Each structure stands twice: as structure tokens, then as C-alpha cells.
Amino acid sequence: MKLFSIFGDPVSHSRSPLMHNCVFKHLNYNGAYTRTHLKDGTQLRETFLNLGLSGANITVPHKEEAYKACDEIRGFAKTVGVVNTIINENGKLVGYNTDADGFMYAIQEFGKIHNILVIGAGGTAKALVSRFVQDDLEVTVLNRSAKRLESFKDIATCSTWDDFEVKKYDLVVNTTSAGLKDEELPAPLEIITKILNNTSFVADAIYGKLTPFLHLAKDKNITYKDGSDMLLGQGVLANELFTNHKLKKADIQKYMAKSFDL
Ligand code: NDP
Image (cartoon, rainbow, N blue to C red; front, side, top):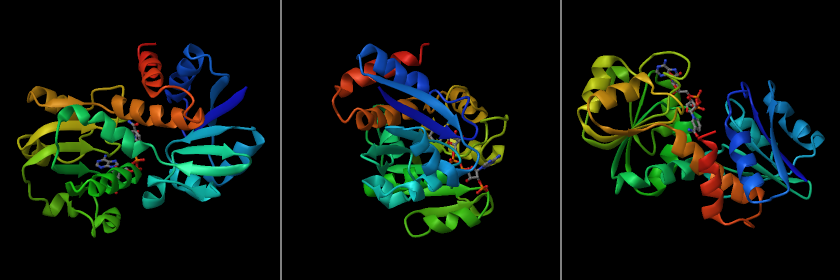
């Protein structure tokens, strides 16, 4: 049996074990997926190997350490320096990033998007903005403080709350953790109101709850989605890697989506 795990701190809230085990069970794949609470990200490689894992997902705050833990990095993870999926190829750890493509999958239903505002400048924003730029989308990044905006200056229009000027957007995405464990908005109400008055669609990376940001979007009758489809999208892509593309993507998607009802 192949063993997989998610690493994070905290990790008890993660839906990944349920998602992947649901696929393994329904498609008769000889695998099991568990969770590992890891406080020190530098212990990731050793813990992965000691557990005899065939693959893993990595969540907050270890995605950058995961990049360092790998022997080889493939695909989009090379561009962003952030890894959320590791595959054990005969003792060689190979790192991938499926978060950004998972998000692209999630926003397909909004149709053609040209102009995006990303609120937040952390790891998730980094992956999404790089992916949007690859697709030639026009991107603005708005963050509470200036420091993290430095890494976006060459590829996007950057603003803090102090110098932000609103434009028209097709989509606004909240990638901050505001609203995750609190009832905060990702920027002051005055700014958020202006933004919501100038966008067609809204998305939040946070899943499983209506954040105050999504609540306001809902009140304004703007089409919105939380991070569940992003989670599903990255999970489907990771499962394809775990099972070495032996299962049909449509089947993975069907049973992984079912796990959200459990
Ligand atoms: P990081 O810690 O890397 O970045 C956090 C960002 O949020 C920073 O830009 C920070 O601003 C900003 N921020 C934090 N608190 C506030 C606040 N109260 N008000 C305004 N801005 C704030 O986090 P990640 O990018 O790794 O994760 C962000 C969110 O995305 C999390 O909620 C996570 O759960 C979710 N996520 C969801 C996924 C999914 O599949 N649906 C996948 C990955 C992440 P500053 O620079 O000023 O500190």
C-alpha cells in the first residue's frame, strides 16, 4: 500500500486526507492518506523519508521549506519557488506546485478574465500572480504593508492601502488570511466598498466559510466563490501525480468532489 500525508502547522483542519482517501476508496487504489503535524519545516525531508511516504502535500507555513527539501523541482513550482506536492521517485523527492493551476480551474466558470486585483502578497498571491502573468492577464496587487510587495514590482501594479487607486476589474481575489480565524476584512471597509463597486466577480482563497469579504460581495449581488474549488482543483492535480496518471481525471474529480459533502 502506498502512503501519503499532508504536512502543516496547524494541520488538523485540513480536508486533504478526506479528499484523497475518498478517491482511493472509490477507485480501488491501494493507497492511504494521513496528516502530519510538523512544527519545524526544516524537518520535512527527514520526516517524509522516515514515514516511508510515496507522496505528500504541504500547507501553511512550510511551502517554501518544501521547495528546499526536494532533489528536483518540476513545472510551475520552479517559477514560484513554492512547493505544495512532493512525489517520491525511488528515493528522489520531486516537487510540484498545483495551487495556481487549481485556481485557474476554479475560475473557469467566470469566462474570459483580463483584469485582476489580488489582495494580499503572501505565498498564495505569489503563486497566483505568477500564473496570471503567464496567461498575459493584467494584475494589480494590493497589500496592507509595502515589504512583501517588493517581489511583485516587476510583474504587476502594486499598491498599499495608502496609495491605492481603484480601477475596473473582471475579478478580485482575496489571498490574505483576513477572515480565516477572525471577522476582519482584507482592507479597510472604505477601500473594499470601492473595489466591490468596480468588479464583476469575487473569489476568496479561504474555504468552508463565508468570510466578511464574501459576505459584502453577496450583499452586493456579485457572483462569488470561496476557496473550495481551488482546493478541489489543486487536489485533483496532486492526486494525478500521486497515482502516476493511472486514474482518469474525471473520476478523480467526481469522487474528490463527493468528499466535500461528507
Ligand atoms: P501568507 O502568510 O503567506 O500571507 C498572508 C498575506 O495576508 C500577507 O500579504 C499579509 O499582509 C496579509 N494579511 C494577513 N492578515 C491580514 C489582515 N488582517 N488584513 C489584511 N491583510 C492581512 O499566507 P498564504 O498566502 O499562505 O495563505 C493565505 C490564505 O490563503 C490563507 O487563508 C490560506 O488558508 C488560503 N489558502 C487557500 C488555498 C485553497 O486551496 N483554497 C490554498 C492556499 C492557501 P502583510 O504582508 O501586510 O503581513
